[in-house]
Length: 111
Length: 116
Image (cartoon, rainbow over the protein chains, first blue to last red):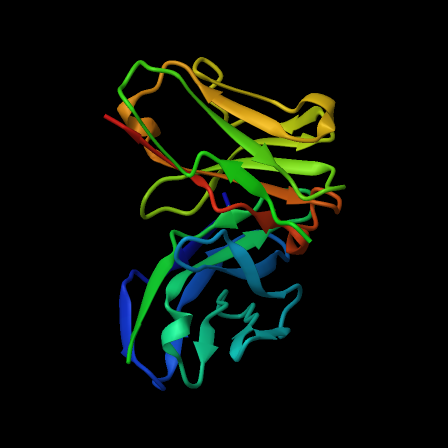
């Protein structure tokens, strides 16, 4: 069945460092891909999405490109801030099916 | 716009006890979801409602878990009796769109359950 694999955390970086969180997926057809973020004490919220190959989702300085040839949707940010500390989830959905979630990657940014 | 409200925020019970969680979705949202999130894992869908009807409860352990959404608004999830492996965060989410459109999904802050 469909699945999502994320890099294990925690990922610890210094402020202003470059961030990459890897996400790869296994799915038939052409799923839509998402990154959700969970800040401490808050609910999950959609960060960005891409619905077809080569689409780039972007929000709050974060970007991810839907790469069908490598079945990947890596999350990147050029310069992280302490406020980016959170847990990040990669997910996919096929039409009329439920969200399939990765295990989440905890990001810790040190000042 | 008010978000998805959940209560309680935390709950500690002993195994074999009962517990209930409450969720009030965003006003006007027809679709409501309950997820179970075990530490170190992604959320797992337990049940999905469309108004007050069940759309998907295939992963709900029906021997101990039950959920209802009377009048198509707020919802209650119950566990009776609880087991140690039920320790998790229980998330409620709601959506105004068709069930397949997940970019419109809004989550509550969750209820953290510890079963001792």
